[in-house]
Image 1 (cartoon, rainbow, N blue to C red):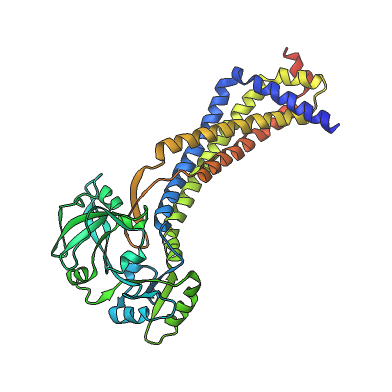
Image 2: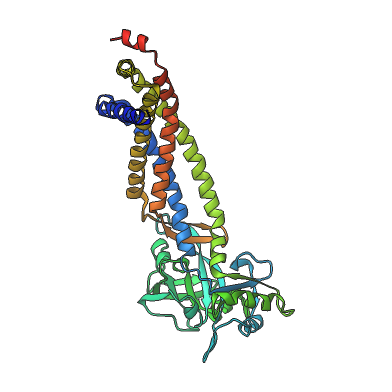
Length: 397
């Protein structure tokens, strides 16, 4: 009995699919609706994927970030040089012949015009010491050279140079009454640092009147397991009032605001378009059932059950969803993958340059969404097909 039922389902579904070319118009309309949903859904979430990839790429559990107590981001933090020295003597810190692997860093934002619009946007301007290059170990100068400490020279990230005008090697920039000379371009494995401008910390502190205060202290730990000991030593030290986080966890938190915004916005748009796609699929599948009424009635008269008819209509609708989802995902990949842009990092109120990223997982999600929409769109037409009166349909022959 079960084998016979399966054979009926296969037979009816095969007949249904073979007749698709005769109903190409309605099928294409339904598939286009599913493709549109997959295109928008995948395209929207590619923003989130690209942004998260850039921000979190270089995070390490073996690097700790120390901010002023209560601070949630570097820009609203402040750590004195004296406290930075205390942090460097804490347990769990890597120490070699040149001293502890501690990088106190000053951070401000400066204006630079976008190449695309000419409008000014905030760009992170970071002041570091030589220790920073050992902690941010993915950073490499790929054009020009490093700045000379105390000279007012700067190096710029590859993504910042691509997005903002005036950051080319040899250009002079004017910020806070100082003239800064671009002498190099650096890469950092495509990470967040590539959206920044770097210079000598002491020079930046002088220019922006920061005294001997830094916004953050990065620390290389002996291992990821040493973090808790390091954190406990700092948070129980009465000299200090600090917040201690792993670098990777801090960077993950930096993406939450934009990620949530894009996910919710993309979800709402996909929902609205999905409802439209469902109605389109319902209409298309009702038209399919109407055009196949005599065929379905004939199959029923020959002994085929209602269940095979219902499942065949559902399978057709699902396949249209899969085809539409795959087409929409392919269009999204062609249109958006690798597209270069920048957006505001809500945590630092500065621009982060990144590329849209259409990942395999995102493509699968888009196709899965279209599959579900196909199932919903074909449900009621499938029930109608299964309940179609045989005698009424045959009278139309």
